[in-house]
Image (cartoon, rainbow, N blue to C red; front, top):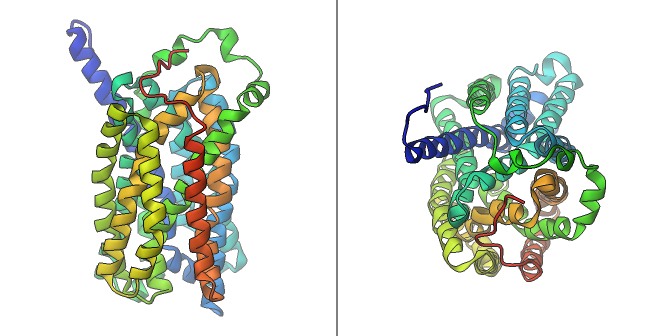
Length: 430
C-alpha cells in the first residue's frame, strides 16, 4: 500500500474516500453480478441442470431455487451483521464477497443433469444457499460501512453507490448475456456458454476480496467501547423492533418492483412474451443505464430536501405507472426498454437513499445486524418469491393479480415513510 505519511490532511482524506468508494463499489458490484446472472441465465440453467422432459417445469424449478436462495439471506444478515457489529464492518464485507464468489464458482463447474441426474440440481441448490448467505450479509455490511464513512451532508449521494455499483454488476452480467447470445449459437450456450459468467464471477470475487482487505475500519465502529460491542444481540434487536419493522415496510414495495423491472424483466419477456432473447437483454441494458443515471439525481435531491419527500415521490410514481407500463409491454424490444426505463427511474428514488435511511434509523452498536435481519427477511419473503409468483400467475391466466399485489406493496411503503423521522444530516457516531 502507498504510504500517506507526510501528505496534507486533505489529500489523506481524499485518498481514504477514494479507497472507500472503490473497495465498497467493486465488492458490491461483484456480489450483485453473482446474484443477478442467475436470473439472466435461468433458461439455460434449467436446460442444463434439470430434466429436459418438461421445459416449463424445469424453468419453474430453476426459479424456485432462485427463491430458495433467499431463504439463507436472513441467516446471512444475522451472521454477517453480528460480525460487522462485533468484529468490524470491513471484516464482514470481506468475508461476504469471498463466500459469494465461491457460490458462483460452484454453479460454473456444476455437472449437467444428463451426467449425474438430480445431483446437478442439488449442487445448484447448495451454491445458491451459499450465495444467499453471503448476499444477506453483504448489503447491510456495505450499507453501514458506506454510510458511516460518508460526510453527513453528502450521505444521500454517497448511499447511491450501493445500487449504482450493484446495478453496474447486473449490467455487466446482462451485457455479457447479450454478447454471448449473439456470438454463440443456441447449442453452445446450452452446452457450455452459460457457465462463462459464473466462472468470471468467481475470479472477480477474489480481486474484490483483496481490495476490501486493504480498506480501513470506520471511525464510528472504532469509537465504540468493548462493552458496547459485546452487549447481548437479541435484546438489542428487540428494543429496536420498531425500526426493524420500518425497514421491512420501506423495503417491501422496493424489492418486488426492483426484481420485476430491474432484474427479471428481460427473462420474463423472452420466456413468457416470446421476445427474442438477445433483443430483450439489450433492452435491459438500456433501462439499467437509465437507472444508474437516475440514482445520483435522487441522492443529491435527498441531501437538499430530505429523505422522506424523495421516498414518497419514488414509490408514488412507481405505483401510478405500474399498470400503464404493464399494458404497454407486449412483444417488442422497444416496449421493454421504455417500460423498464420509466419504472426504474422512479424505483431509483428509493433505491438511491434507503442505504442511508436504514443506517440513520439505528445506533452504531446494532446498525449492521439491525438492518441486516429485517431487510433479509423482507427480501427473502417478497423479493425472492416475486419472479416465481409472477410466472406462475401468468401461466394460470391471473397476471393482473400479481400487478395488484406489486402496487399494494408500494402503497404500504409510502405509508411507512410517514412513521419514520426525517434523518437527513444525522450524526452516526453514536
